[in-house]
Image (cartoon, rainbow, N blue to C red):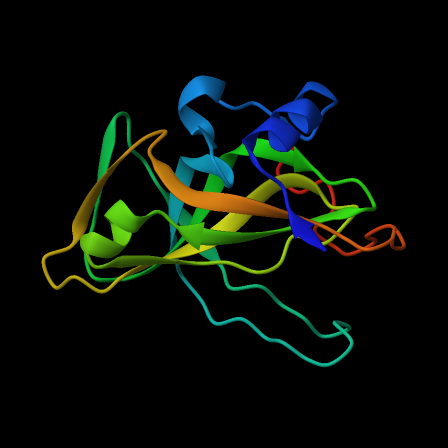
Length: 165
């Protein structure tokens, strides 16, 4: 396994790795790609998680309307990213919050982007700061790090393939 650098990421973007980004020259980083904020929602109900997903129920949400900025008081929120990621069968990704968010007392909670996944991903924003945080639409909130697998894997067939497209 190896982590892709900016040149490898750029080559794969030209072949369809990421689309709907805002500014490649700003978002492309030495070891990853910054994804941006499209929308934010409040959690409105409990979710249910079981072993085989036969009884899975996702938490209900209510989108928070904003034109330029949104203020998020302390709490947990669901966010949708602008970018659509399309991973080949030899590539997976993980995401970490941008350090500016961490310095504001905010974390971004993510899962693994499996090889073969395609979609406009969702993440959770955890505002720990008791004074809240202001986020601007299209703010860079997470950095995706792409990991090349030792060999190709089976295509992703999970429920979230093609989400939010």
